[in-house]
Image (tube, rainbow, N blue to C red; front, side, top):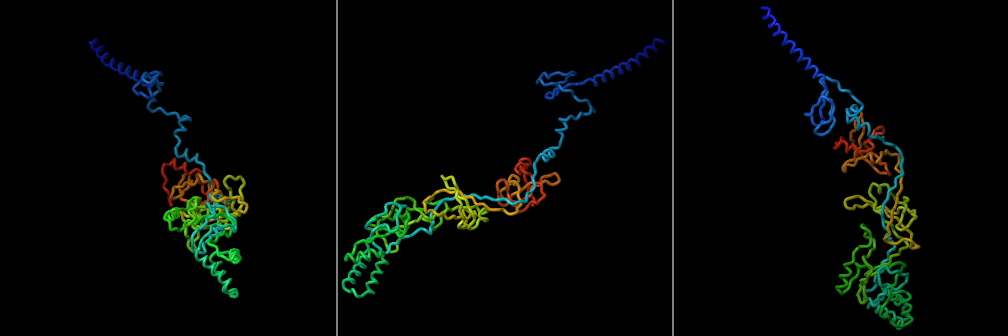
Length: 428
């Protein structure tokens, strides 16, 4: 019986001892650190080492309930992204001040149309002799341009000679005949020579009334020869810049289409003489700049191939529309008695003016969306886009007409805000 009791005790105590030993072993394994590979989580080791797959160092696996230690590096990464961006964006406030504005424009030297003299044919006839060889030939006052045979002039000469020989006492009729010759283009010296010689001449000369450069009026040339008509009609305006006033004189090439033997009619203008002692400089100014330009404003002109600029004044401001945009034709008058300037010379002009007391921000703070302009205003730590209306630009500053207040904090670089946000929504 005693033996049976010992067997029963062994059967009860032995399982308890085995259970206790198993618990101790489990606790030891739980307290043992495990190391895993960050790239291959299936690789587990009970000691530090390297991953047999990729060679990376094994890291200790955190235990359940273990508190994570916040290091300086981890603290930097855990900061809110928005707070980091906002804290590094530079801001500016609108500035109220006066600025000197300088507008520039490119132009060209052209003719002063007030100094263009047309030489009409006083009596129709045939060109007997042409003394002009090419367009823009320099000519002096009183120099002969051509000789013309005119039946009307020939008859008027004969009438005067007849009256002088047969009716010398009829002063009124003689003077009337002389006046008719003058109206037909004869000069007083030609009339006196006619009376002294006593016989008529078959051709009369056409003389230049001024000094300058002679050009051909291509649109006025008429001839019975079809070749001459086609040559005249082919002349086009190719000498002046892109926008040429209708009154400007221009010729495409220097070759004459007028020929000896051509017939001309009364009142026809074959040649014009341009006096270059006075010239124009013309510019096309954009409307924002042209709005502040007026007659007699100072302007500084810098010509091509010259070093020193000259000072002049605005002579005319004429608004016009080109390709759907508003411009202004700004004209400056030049005195050119010494022939210092020439037609076709390129010029750069600088127009200076004062802005007045206006509100300004850096150009970089303005973001142009095409149809709208905006600036990013910082309020309560957040940047919000707001529509603005701008005016003139002076260097790195741009004028604000409306949309901002004096105390507003504006992002210095508006383009950076677009890149960081990815989109813009303008609120009115």
